[in-house]
Length: 325
Image 1 (spheres, one colour):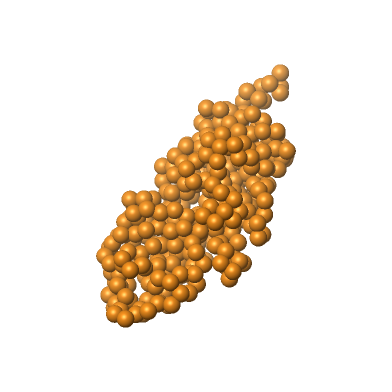
Image 2 (cartoon, helix red, strand yellow):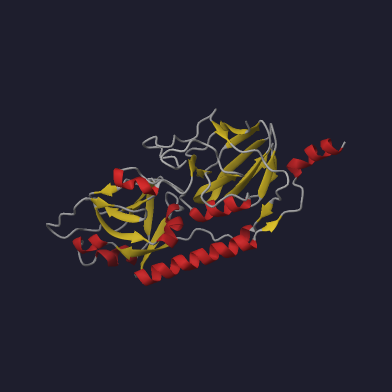
């Protein structure tokens, strides 16, 4: 069987798909894509369904060797990549052949990048999803050297696709938020403080980002009850410093939630790096729905802008010359 062999893993690479949202009522975290736009673009570049399983890396990618056949991959992220030491482009379908090694370098922008494989990664389904939740082991763990990632054989008749990198929206430092139902438990100035100035990202992972700024305080005697949480919720512990929850979040939380990032901006929140800042802007539900519709329209425009790639990349030239000789 054709597979990708992990020769050198990135610091926090996992297999992800759209996640296992249907199991939160029994305490199973959803997981799933941190940046759904990049995942959709990478999958489209290799003719996958938008929810096909991909590799999502953090900060730096992996060194992968193709074993047992040929594969087609696409890298979505602001990084440099090489095949057998030869530079290859991102946001383009790439044909890789038995024995070739793909090296994905550090990100120049953002926290996460995506590598899609034609047909989707064929790791085991767990509760209907291939998403990895490393903290619990549901769906597996982070990539480690020696891991084998099963893939489907490449269809040689399928054309490579390319998207101009300049068209891809870059992560932004501004995230729109809705007031959460528990915002009434906070002092009257809490929401104003949240949007008044940028917040610094102290540290984070797929579970959440710890932010630093002016303390956000509960009203005296306020007693928040444990309730379900969603990705993008700003959960505020006793320190007053919020935690922006990510896709690997818990399913229920006892800390009060002041606000929640709108769906259209969750990718911007997930892409903030340690030491960077993020600014919040409060909007209403009508604006949030409008932003989601706009994001969906922008994705449609990007998919329509993809073109067939007719050029032969340098890493394929030696193989083609051998076949023609």
